Length: 141
Ligand code: BOM
Image (cartoon, rainbow, N blue to C red; front, side, top):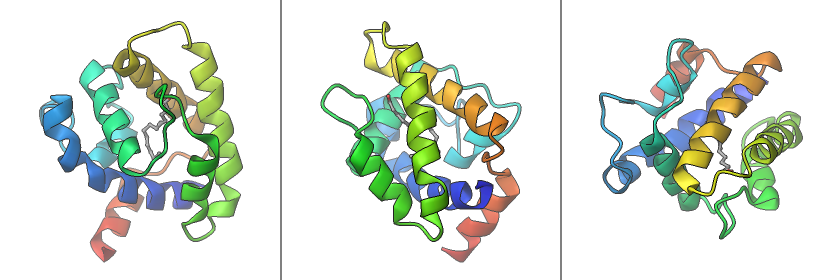
């Protein structure tokens, strides 16, 4: 659900500042990670793909080929309250997106495409969080 997704995003987003330098992601492109979910935020910058790879690696969510590690992603989502209602759907959405862009060999470029596809898919599935929901979660941290 969107509620669980807001918890996951708030947690995952904490890794952004650790990854900003190595991914060359400027604050002008994305200042706070939860803005990823804003309707008017376009998921297009290669540097964002690099940042997502770096952030995912902090939680061991990727394999050596920079594709999702299915079991680890599943367990990561499960670690949140009511994560069980989201984990399988999330893994499925991401994997379907990976299949669509498998021909892009540059990891950062491919991952930003996968992330954009995931955002569309999650929105269509009704599990995209409102930015206000994420901000409410962040206030409790
Ligand atoms: O093939 C690469 C797989 C990368 C998966 C990451 C996609 C997520 C994009 C960014 C949105 C994140 C929101 C919540 C946390 C996801 C773990």
